[in-house]
Image 1 (cartoon, rainbow, N blue to C red):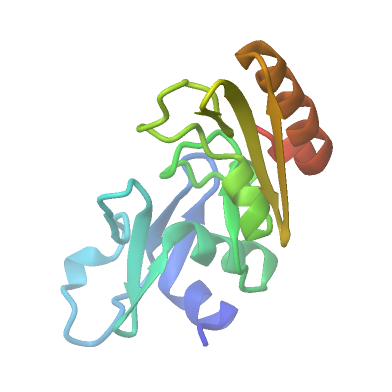
Image 2: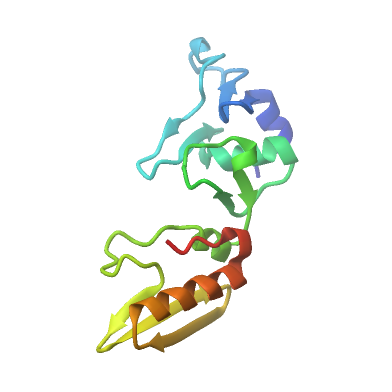
Length: 162
């Protein structure tokens, strides 16, 4: 497992921009020109990643380890910008809370997160940890209103209903 000491030896964290900068070459054969430059690369999903001792890590998890000294299982980007790794934008969360902060999927036909149409009814579907809530309504407005209220009740600050 990656240690805080190893990360501190390799990187400097710029809290204003939210990026990791190489302090030292990651291994003896690495180019010396890396020192002082931004570490890692951007993944296709928008997150930034860094390679440490042959293993890939997401930049936001490495930053969390560097700042707080513990390895996080799950980290949420509060503003949903995946490469905005300023520490005030990162928060520890559960998988369920992280999913609650996601927008509606691209293939969502109604444009409302957590609501779908089944025959002549609108069904709300919310999953929180190991609990699943499903309720149907005659109108999209009722379903949307109930979803927003229940979602906020279950997820608090992590709730994003749009």
